[in-house]
Length: 353
Ligand code: A2P
Image (spheres, rainbow, N blue to C red):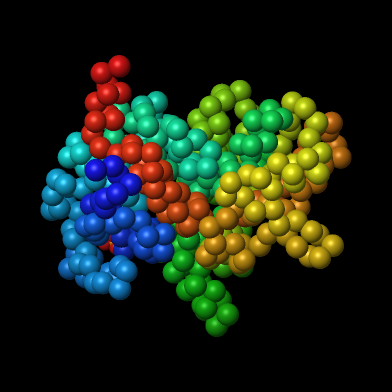
């Protein structure tokens, strides 16, 4: 039976988290052919119940779960969990789609954005496919078609990243601090390095020797890997902002050939997964609060950069939990099913080559 005609044993690892629970709702919304569903989290949540498609499913402890029989495993439980358990699931025959940064930069692990490089999902000698970081993810459907036609040489990007990117505890911290400050109480930062309510923090993930943060370097490494072009220069600044859902990005690109704002709009109007939302005279530009809960990546404020010959500015917004993480993981799984790319046989063929 071809993949298209059957259903699958799907495991969601980190099912009680912000991304995990969205993975489950997206699987249900998109009618993914789930035969058996295993929902996994830490010992803390084991025994609890989660609703999927109107049915209650019991959360199991990842540490004692036997992955035999799992065909697709969606991981979003943090880097250390992926490092330990993703190879075990892959060894048991599952295709792992991993949302952590653990494997993203390994040459034998494809890094896939469903609209941009789905072909890469086929070559996965370790049985693991990586999902890009949320901030890279939303850039790619916009930049890939421009790069194909006009050749992007340099990207300057400042990100405005919502607290949900830091998981459930990030959401809780913004809510708690906002309430405390409005009640004139003292706050104590726990999840974030500094006060996040009514503030911006130019620090996500650790600082590296070159002065950039790891979150910023993810944009450099991942853009080059996904666009398959190591010559692209990327200069990022990543900022955490007091927004619950939705990352916004101020993006300036320099292209080999002159790209007018009009031509850019025409290219982006055809780009899969992208919605041009750009009419400043009508106050029409993408906003995080509008993108939250939506699947598309929105682009607006498209305008030529007056200061250099081949520069273009854009404002790009997407729901970081959906397109930035859970949706892309499910879209990769759909691609594997559609193209009959599931199963151990693909990996063995690749290894033999
Ligand atoms: P749990 O709820 O049991 O802690 P978020 O990114 O929103 O904080 O979510 C993290 C997810 O990863 C949760 O589902 C969490 O489960 C899960 N998780 C964290 N640590 C582990 C672990 N050691 N083993 C399994 N799941 C884990």
